[in-house]
Length: 268
Image (tube, rainbow, N blue to C red; front, side, top):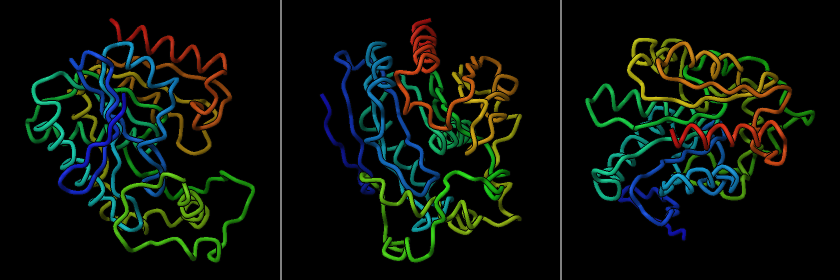
């Protein structure tokens, strides 16, 4: 059963109950912090969590360029604090994120460490990252050239939490092609380091499941792979020659093996 929760700041969460409600999983979607929705959690990924007894909390967050990356992350921290106080309480909890959501759960864990707050029991990150060093790299993610006219009708100023129809995808692609994502995020060369998670913090992270494709054209494979070195208890599961968001191919044999290994890991 899924119900929508609304927090005091306007953030909405889709809560899917496993049946026992003894532990919680916070899920953060991808989309480069520009597009995306809490509704993008694939059933094939949700199933291992539900079978392991988690209640899933799929959470929206503020989106750029309507909001700076600093404000986006702060909203995530604040939303989670309210969830912890009103829904999770003293129950065990874990985090899962995809792509930008993978970065967000790593940043949220760093925030909890730095504020001496309770930590998640586990982290599950799909093809994420832990700094912004690659954001301005030239990346060819589509053969279509996105023009300024194509994004002219997309609101870039009013508060926005959710993009359920993924209409802002074209805005993200424009930012990648024009190499202006740091402008979207309102991050400069001088402040970019503020968004880097340090090696020292990673030493204190909880057990982590990390996976990515060797041919990822959107986020460098090295990020997910290097978590095995940075986090003391990290299980890294590579896939080969698939796209960035390979969860879109749930029937692929390699992706099915990722789900199988995740299921085993969750139950050990």
